[in-house]
Image (cartoon, rainbow, N blue to C red; front, side, top):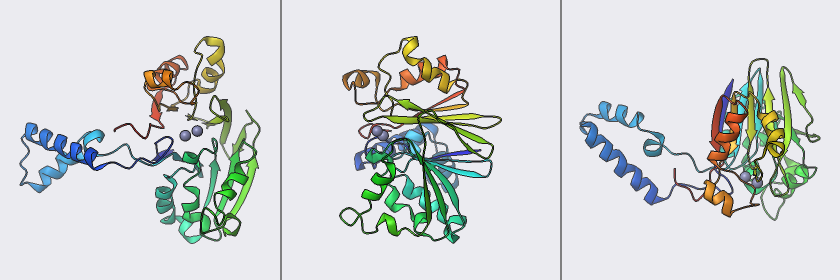
Amino acid sequence: MKLTFWGVRGSLPAPLRAEAIKAKILLGLKEAGLAGVNLQDELALMEFVDNLPVNIGGTIGGNTTCLTLETAGKFIIFDAGSGMRELSRYLMTREFGQGNGHAHIFFTHTHWDHIQGFPYFVPAFVPGNQFDIYYIHPYVPDVLKRQMTAQTFPADFTMLPAAIRFHQLQPEETVTLGPLRVGNIELQHPNKAYAYRVDSADYAIVLATDGEYKRLDRPSIKQYLDFYHNADVLIFDAQYSVREAIIKEDWGHSSALIGADIAREAKVKRLILFHHDPTSTD
Ligand SMILES: [Zn+2]
Ligand SMILES: [Zn+2]
């Protein structure tokens, strides 16, 4: 089972700014000084850089929501944010480059940050590839087509040569993909978003992005605790700090602390905080 994050930002892509890069270099140099690294020794320097924490030696990333799950012979994609462009590059090095690829794409909802990468999804331009698209909002196919018409994009959706099949799901309907079961639950979000849970014989993964938890009393959150229960991994919308989440009531997002609380209650084994605000630093 391999879970990959191709985009983790909420709302809008957020490339690193020059000041942020300078701050990372400064911190790195300071750390190197403290560690007594010989700056002339290239190998020692590389090893030191490789072991820097992600906030100094790497980045959380600036692309919006796109995740993949490779398991049980299935390739599952969640959402088509700008991270999908990076995913494209990876897939084109695989069977998708030769038109022999097959993926299942699940959409949580159609806000820009979850669909804007689709026009740049190169495997859809390769004849022979197959994509099964699952969604709950009835208008998902229409939105994907509308963002690829002449006014907004040079290539028209209806001309894509790959085989694209749409499957509308009902709220809380479970779809079976070989040995996997994929369920969904509605989240509180402007115009609704849906969390997905993938269950196999030996693990469960939940993607719960774009969700607000305004009421935390048991009856209000019981449905979420049940849906997240015992998951090996819960990927949780942590766009805001607690203070921001209170100020931005009804904006449809949550915070790391709410995530930690819900994950503990639901006996989740591993919590992954996700969908970071584009104004936040690494
Ligand atoms: Zn979003
Ligand atoms: Zn949204």
